[in-house]
Every structure is written in structure tokens, then in C-alpha cells.
Image 1 (cartoon, helix red, strand yellow):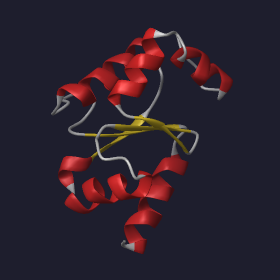
Image 2 (cartoon, rainbow, N blue to C red):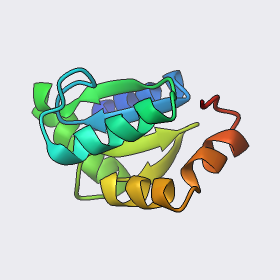
Image 3 (cartoon, rainbow, N blue to C red):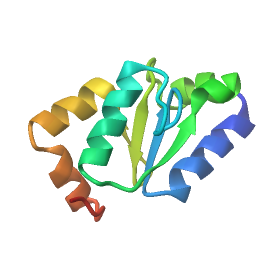
Image 4 (tube, helix red, strand yellow):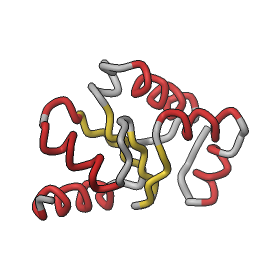
Length: 109
């Protein structure tokens, strides 16, 4: 595992309270799952930064190894891996996601 990519990812997830590693951009998601998570975050009016894994194969593979999680998107809140689209959607549907953000001190709508 490339130490540099691990360092880069660590820096990225600590630089913002909410970071989404996704395919595409929030304005133009390149997969349905990334789009779902963006829609949920936008609905909750959560400020987040994003990383387009399609721009860099090293990041795309690195993030999967970093979390030992095989799929993208991946959501981080306050340096903690939350999960992928299924987990985020489930938390949202169970009304747990908004509370999770509140507990972490993240502003929602």
C-alpha cells in the first residue's frame, strides 16, 4: 500500500468535517449511488467536500484499501468512515442520519 496515498486520504478526511469520496462531482454525479448520497446530503443541507475518484485511479483504489470497503461512494464525518450508499440511505430512512450529524456537531436543515 502506497504510504503517500494513505497520507493524502488522511489529510483529505481531516481537512473537512464531511467528505464524500464519489464518482463524479456533486453537480454531476457519474453513478446512481454517488448521486443518492449527494441528494441526501443536499436534502439535509449538510456542507460537504467531495473527491472525484474517477480523476485518479490511485485515489480510487487507495480509498477502498484505506477503509477496507470495496465500493464507492464512501462518506466520512469528522474523520470517521460512515459507510457507502446503502448505509447512508438506511440511516437517512431510519431518521438516524440527521441525529448522527447533530451528535457530531454538523449543522443540518
